[in-house]
Length: 90
Image 1 (cartoon, rainbow, N blue to C red):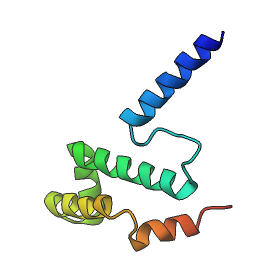
Image 2: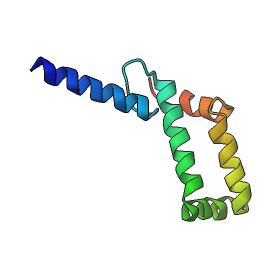
Image 3: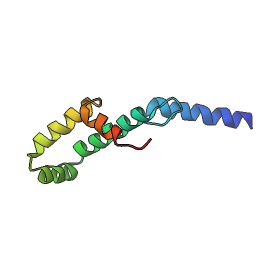
Image 4: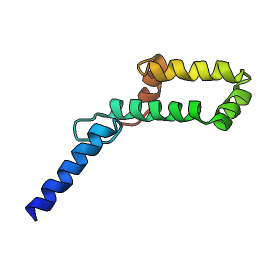
């Protein structure tokens, strides 16, 4: 029984080391939100139809939209993420 618990904990530690966004006890709400935002923008950039949809919706070229998403993804502490976090209930 104790060996199973050790095995499960070691597997969890391995997953947390492999995948940055995996939840752990020391992760606060802001860091979790930054991980979600970073992963979402990476998905938007990587999937062309979603990128094209956002481009049409915002009346921007696809490459301009990709550039804007890259800028938001690379700087998670920009004013947009602070504004989003200020709107969340406590």
